[in-house]
Image 1 (cartoon, rainbow, N blue to C red):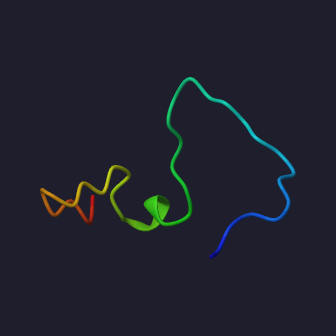
Image 2 (image 1 turned 90 degrees about the vertical axis):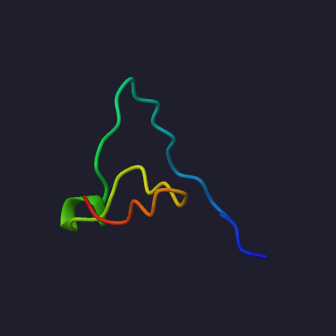
Length: 39
């Protein structure tokens, strides 16, 4: 089982920000039913 052993920070936002893979062209929602892989 994999999980976080230490949590250093939790940030709550009122909007969605793009992460590492989303900035490189992958979908931010990644809906598997619509095959939403790339933006």
